[in-house]
Image 1 (spheres, rainbow, N blue to C red):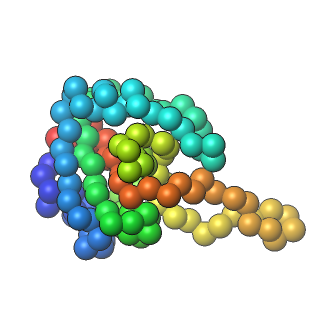
Image 2: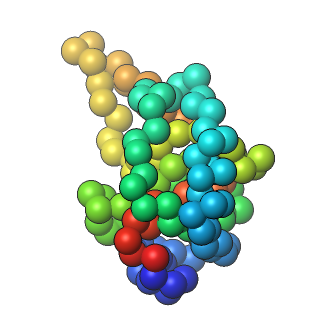
Length: 125
């Protein structure tokens, strides 16, 4: 998969500044840096069986979130937030309407202020 192939995963890709492809060694280093944020719902990083990935860079967290919301296939691909220090901090999930409790109060979601997404390419690389 190349830059164009990754951009085609989204209905709107204009906010992606650039894409960096990572090999097995680089991906293992990124995974080793994993530090789940305090608001991370599931602190365990799902296992990657094929260590190939791409880092999608954005100007802001908002741009990354809005692009992720346009992901066409929300089952096949896994995304993870990286902070500006290139530390993996949690799973990135496309936005869904806020869940509410029985009293109508919004249930907090995992919100992390980051502007990079790591895409697990698996055998798509």
